[in-house]
Amino acid sequence: MQLNARQFFISIFLDSLFLFPVIFNAGVFAQQSNLSKAVNYLSGFIASDYFRELKKSNNDLALVDTIYLRAVKFEKNDYSNALFALIFTTVPYKSVPIKLPLLPFIIHFPLTAAPDSIFILKNRNLPKELYFDSPKDKFGDKDKLAHFFGSAFISYSSNIFDLSNLIGYFVEVFENDFKVQSSIDPRDLQTDSLGDIFGELLKKNKNILPSQVMIIRSLLFFKYPL
Image (cartoon, helix red, strand yellow):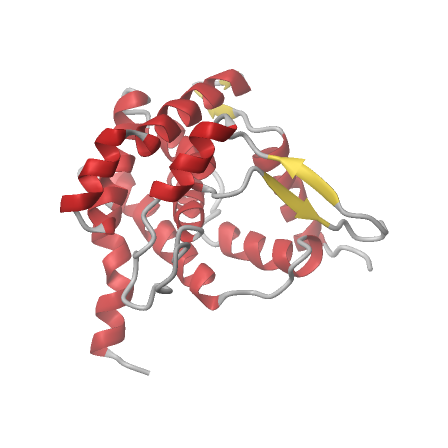
């Protein structure tokens, strides 16, 4: 199987985002250690007793806002860095199994993540009821958070090129051609679109919150049911 131009471009993006995670900021590349610090801090916050207490009196969308605001504060209002750190903080996996085209074996690429003890507690506390149709199990829609913040990061940071739909294409190609499990979840792509909207709005209004965009999916469903 050969890669077409679009797939090749996105595979390069995949490498830069997941395998060599650095942030371009003010003309210099921040080292991965800076990302690790943010991911460790935010993971520790989500894993904390304080956050568990918040879960008792707040719905999951409000908790998403709390995590987002904590990231923005940690990154001193650098919204691009905050969104980038949130991708790796909220992804519930420590590695990604990838089957590259033309290669007969699976490669497990490690992702930037907190130590195991914190990582497990963080995953347990991640908000999971993001939508009206979130699965009613222990996992729910926890995997949608990285989709949302990943798309928001790309949308917010696209100052030169029009990358507004890149995350959707990236997910489609990645899951079709690279990832071991190749089924595409349309709810993932819908979440990508919401993240794109959030990133665009954030450019104009720094007071916008993730919940104010994520709720659109539920509102549209009840207004225009299938």
